Image 1: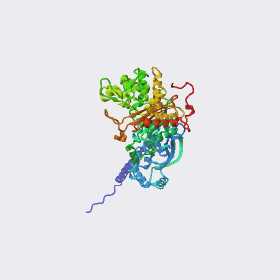
Image 2: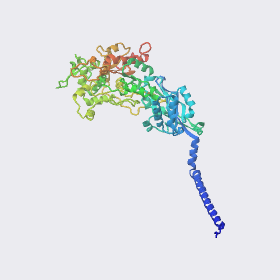
Image 3: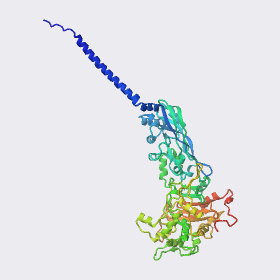
Image 4: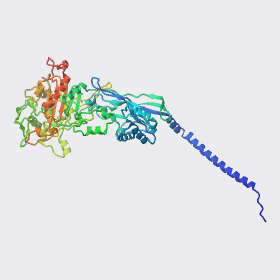
Length: 630
């Protein structure tokens, strides 16, 4: 018998439907609650954060770099200016995650060599903020600008911008004194003010550009701009103008600089000319030189390698960093030390047989004149550059007193006010040798120190300053390159004391000897003095490059050209009223009086003589007894 079919339980079905509906309602309510909670969190709790993010998508603060201050010579000729240049920039934030691919396409579009691609990436990674545009290429041509414009849709974050770039219209003339600017590297970023240097990609690297960086740079400005989704500026909402850097007027004179370079005649060497009464450096030559414009927008590896590896060392600043034994150029200063210390008098005589011997010592310290000069007093010793006289005086004076006096003349210390690349040189002492070599000081080292040999080393700038101190009779004014910073003259925060002597006449005795070097009948540089239209006080010198054994004679024919002696000459003129002091160093020139002295005279002629070759009226000797020297 078949089973009866059960009837449908409507009550049970209704209960199931209601339970399912209830679960569904609970789930919906929970989801709505989560959505409401999330909306509350975003709209209320994080309202300020997200409103700021939204505003930043629309409004950006862009830095406006200041214009770098200009640099002029003393007569208003431009030495460093700024000129417009089109550069290619990339903003990582706008280029997106594939910014390296964008760089690949830039290289492809502009048909650049592969090494440029590596340089581009290096520059991008040096960028301080991902939303700041970073220049990756300068000096774009019209064709390159057109190629970028046509392919702009393929190059997100890439823009062509116009900006001012440093330019040096005088080229190599002032490369070592003014220096140059270059791209800011990662190490320099750590010491710079990140706010004030926003948008600035260059800074002073050497010379005046580096020393006065804070003055030349100025203060950054800002503008708030509204942009679209692609970052294009729609309008400027607010602007704060930058404060441009101050202009610098230097003490250098372009015409004198050119005359000094011409006098050096393409030889390796250095020339410093300064005004004794003010410390103003009017010429500063280090040859060979280089074009600083190569460094502004980034020098190529090949070009830098040629400069760096050149045997002539064009990047080397011989004026400030070149260390040379001063040789006989310091004999007038040594004479001042001997007179003031009381170990000699103006009439003290030494008999010169052509050499000098210490008591109970067989070694002979040769005079340059092997035949000897016979009886020699102070004036003749300076005029003839007699080594024997100064050997004897140095032995009597002793190394300690020599160190004290020569230090007062600026040897062994930095003398410049605004040249931070200057090397201190070396004025040795007992303590120095003990610390450096752990050895005692020997009497023979004192003897050769008296003629500027041995451990003593000086820069051409220090020799020029020591000569200026002779001209001013001990008045200390630091050499400097800045004549005006904006409208203000530079100030020496640490002035050095003047050189005070027991008797001011000591200056006259030494200067008279320097004058006889050029105008005396037996002066070592009388040929140069005979052709001068004014009276010059000077002193020649030679600096040994390689040592000569005892008893041997110097023979330039047996030496490599670069192993020959350096030629030095220091001078000031006119003697009655010194207007210019000059130091000349000609590498491997051998003869101070024959090679360096004519160079010094040409520099002084360019400053002191008029167009007709006559001494300018303002420098003429007085007709009364007001002259400074008897």
